[in-house]
Length: 153
Image (tube, rainbow, N blue to C red; front, side, top):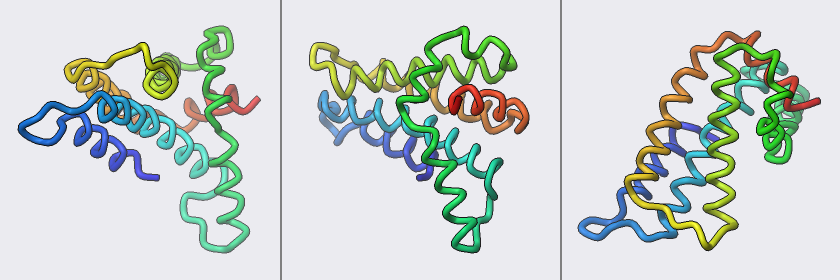
């Protein structure tokens, strides 16, 4: 799962087929791809920290995958509760807020037919996601570890 490829797909979906505008479904899928770029970046970083970032043996590969998959959507929803992240660094609190916000948009995109997304709105969500991902990649492992612990516990 490559977060950069997911964002590239989100941008393509948000731009639509020229000369026509993207369909409502394309915009919904773009929002979903943007959310999953953040989600999978978090999962990968945690697996790389807690298991190994270069799994070679079958046991290392299995361990890496167990960590990666342990951080599921239901657990990420807990980030909506500010009390759970109160002890995290400002960087990770900002990341938690961003992923929780994108998760809300993703829920609307997938499960709420009453919500309509506009192309400018989706472009902004993608730009915000790119910015969040850039900052996340600069965050020290110990700060990411604190947030991952909240999500897993």
